[in-house]
Length: 439
Image 1: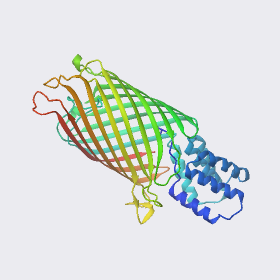
Image 2 (image 1 turned 30 degrees about the vertical axis):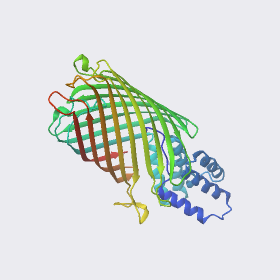
Image 3 (image 1 turned 90 degrees about the horizontal axis):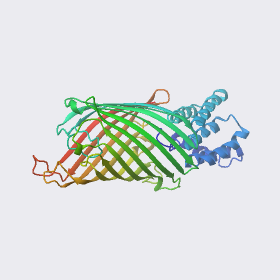
């Protein structure tokens, strides 16, 4: 939640209330009501500054109007003023207490306040079971010939993340967090994995469109409870939000980034195989909003990207250039007969995600692994499918999501090992379930 500016979208229930209100009061001359309706439409369209200007007109006449305060919280959330948004939602709830209850509005306030709060403080815990057909650890970002078991095994994962943003305004965000991952194999203990990491991020926004970010990450990885990798990463990025109207497909955001990593592999090895060193990455990402069927609230998130990497090491075996191509599709699964409801559990979000990555790795020196001493080249193909069912989404108790995951990886290399007659390759098929609780 704390990794970028929240892309606020008015909840479907609120949108239905809003547009029914517009129809009912289309001929009402009350300027206060007209300003409130206009502000609500601006929020729906992502025009948050325009919404706040119209809400100021309503506040001048009705400073305790709970709908005005609710939409103020929504507009402030949309532009990144999360602390002010929380205050607006709290004021709306207090005003509703004194003016008389409105169950629909009260639920909207509680739900959207929780979403804004998650951009200030967020905690999550994930646990899962999976079967891995080829247990391996690819810690170098490309296939490492000595870290592949070649055996199938059951895997238990547990991950936790904590995020906090002491500063969260329209122009500035300062956030930090801590994360950990624990992976236990049922039988192949030498591939048990532990990762501990932290990050610090500062974002500066310029108007409604531009956002610049500087982020520092540090992670330490243990393999079978022994130190394996220490990694420092510094990432700078520039993001542009398009905010264009459209019906079928519109660009959502464009981002370019540069990342510098300093890697220290914490074990003794042959000097030629030393992987300590620097990695440089530069890339571009583009996201879109796609509505394939007009008048049906089926909005897909589509993204694509490219990343170029240059990895230099103190040895010469793993020096390489990489090209990564990525695509992803994320969409809600709605009931075609009732577009305001989801499949399976009507009032609980159900989402499907597909992602794919193709990596071309071009090594710079002759490989000591190859019996012919050729220069190594890799092609790694990775496909992932995820189905996510929200089981609980309560402002007080948090959100619980059940996920089913399938991932297939194919790595091909021109390296011919001394005990093989054909080039090295491996396939990896993982399927499992995850349960995530976040608050």
